[in-house]
Length: 154
Image 1 (spheres, rainbow, N blue to C red):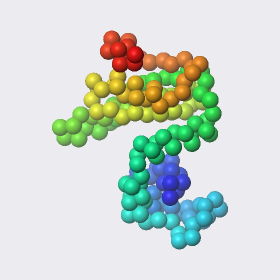
Image 2: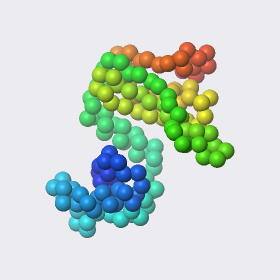
Image 3: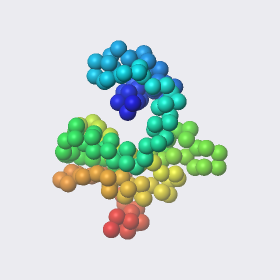
Image 4: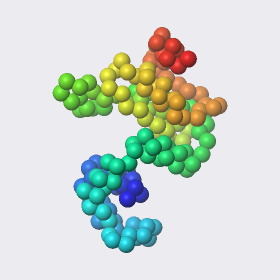
């Protein structure tokens, strides 16, 4: 189910209904690589399975798997934050995503979401803790010059 969900999301699925439909539409192709004894799962089953997964454990395993494919990161890694469009929910502030981008390979290595612009420093610190960047040049915009940033990274 994880492989089907990953493939569907990479192909643009945004909801569990989309994931289930993608699985049905591509079942013949999927059977070349996966054992599907009882067809592909329904959207309700995808929803239940992913609700039961521990998000932090899943994220750690996923990052480890991706890094095994990518190998050692070299060169420049750019850290930058962006506000996610239309993410403000009533009184809640908009979602800001901090990303680490490996420029040589063209890959986004990791992202960390934070609520509110004032929380970006903690997001950068959390993001950097998940990556191994030994020997890399890490770049950042003016956020990296903030006086509180130095204190939070010590």
